Image (cartoon, rainbow, N blue to C red; front, side):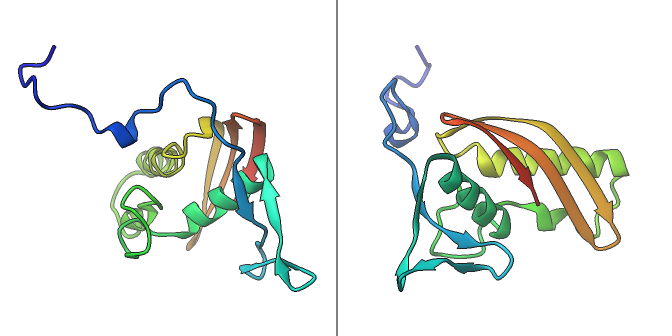
Length: 140
């Protein structure tokens, strides 16, 4: 019991032991950064393939920048640009920001085998995402 008995956790954030519906997302061409069409219609993906698209989009979207997305969606990786942190501290922050960006999705259970590489102005990431459907290898 809390010392503030009338303050309850938000119910929209509580996930009961209920079964999640099948995760769906529109297919995406990662190289051209456009949706994929099949016979002139948007192609739909399910399960881990759909989650790969969601992960890609979440890691391409800066958090708090676009009003179309909730404040829970996206990443804060741009805050590392120009920072004076040591390399290890930057790697740790990148990992934390990616985990925060992805674990808001209830279909994502864990992120492991995280590798970070800085190359001049680029950031390269490799990690494994454990989902309710299995594992997905992500390379960004």
